[in-house]
Image 1: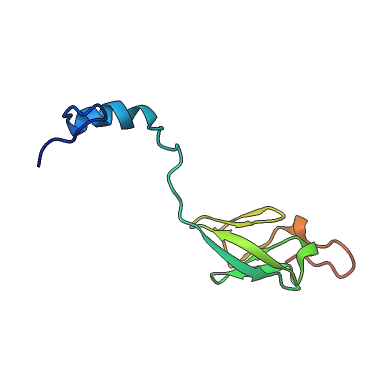
Image 2: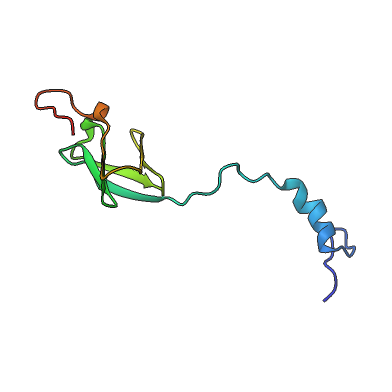
Length: 109
């Protein structure tokens, strides 16, 4: 098999074609490495928590009984809207007391 032919009909090396066509259009690699994520649906329970992978994460009390979309990575759980970000470290219950209803019958978990 012969050498590839350039647009002008001349024979060129792959290296020469790369240098003239591909290299000028390359962009730098992203600063952050790729992080695998899964999207899941969860329903907010009456205790303001959703369950993901055996752990329970508090959500804003306004979302009780609502279904939410959750983005799950190895280190973070993010609820899509309204945006809530939770660390996936710690014990089984990850409760943010600021997201809880402060009215009658309020108890800290």
